[in-house]
Image 1 (cartoon, one colour):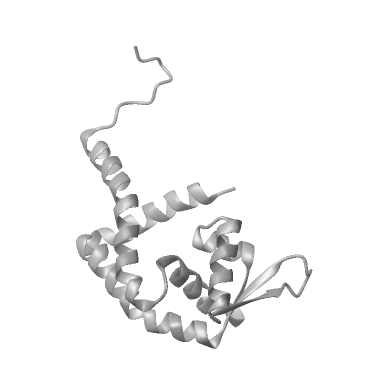
Image 2 (image 1 turned 180 degrees about the vertical axis):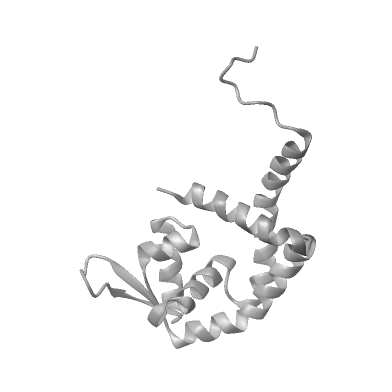
Length: 154
């Protein structure tokens, strides 16, 4: 028996949205990884390279990079260490306090990101954007950004 504190049942449209999101969060990463396989970088690595390419001096605190990529501190460390192994990123002590580390995009990393960018953009269009009516993109973008922000708040 439902109590007064139970949430209301989902409408048919809400249920379709919820179930579709559940399938999407599993299917989309696999599809994007398949698309990126020929570039030599994973989607996660590409996201890190892209964030660093847009940062001032191509440098970010590891904690800010983790937050920007939606990764845990331990996961960003593993990703950056892997990229460092291939000469795409280097880690340096943070200049102001020396307690944290910065990730710095190298010229090799910038070239790798640039060469993978066309594949990434084609994947974004084919896998997602081509399926969303253009007039819905602004509202959908805002809604997804709001959900992401709420989930990523400490």
